[in-house]
Image (cartoon, rainbow, N blue to C red):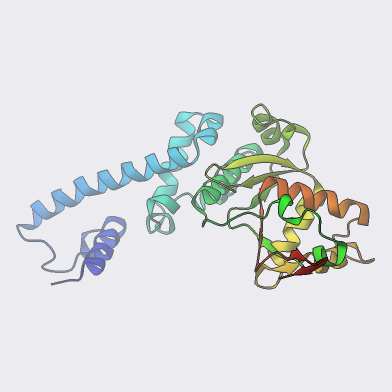
Amino acid sequence: MLMLETAQGAMMRALDWGPAELPEGLFAGACDRVLLGMKVHANTISHARLVALEDTFPRTRTMMGYDRFNERSRRFTGLPGATMQPLARIGKYFPDFLAGGGEPDSVVGLARFEWLWLEAYHAAEARPLRLAALAGMDESALLEVEIAAHPAARYCRPDRDVFALLGEQVLGLGDADAILIARPDADVLVSPATAAMVRLLGRVKDANENRTAIGNLFTGLTEPGCKDRLPPDDFMPALVALLDAGVLQNIGSVPHRTDNRWER
């Protein structure tokens, strides 16, 4: 008897490549009855995939129109790479598929935003580092604090039409440099981001093991010759804005004050 995982894998291959992929003896009964059952199952799976895409990209579907979205979705869900994905992850490559199919930048950008939103929604839990935790620190103690990007932290720079569309719901987004996505608590939050905030968050994400000291960030981003150099006066406002958005977390412990000294 086949193990459950092996049997499920065989059934998925049969749905994609035909009944020849079904191992002998997987099902009892006549061959025509087995094929009939597989057809019913295939229709159920196909419908579930289409519904999953609709649920993942509701704004994109509205922008494209139902018929166009449905036609593109059916083509996408017929690709082997898509069919092997679980329903919760089936939309991962859908924006790339739309881009490769010649869809407008506004459609592709909106789809990328919606996928990042879903990634943030499913990201691991973590306690965000809040500005209040750093209040009262002297400069040397602040620069030693090690930070990392929150697991749900995402940002994107889609077509300007996407900024305008989402800006109807998020104050200030229409004129922003980038879109910031976070889930510091229970809800996914979308907020505008400046170029400085994106550079800073990008450097945190690129850091070794996704962790770095605030002092290393400051030195790396403000030194002459840095590719993404920030004016020194822009660093702290960007850091404070990222803390307010809930896209950073503390690695280790924030030092606390004891006898006029900062200790860990």
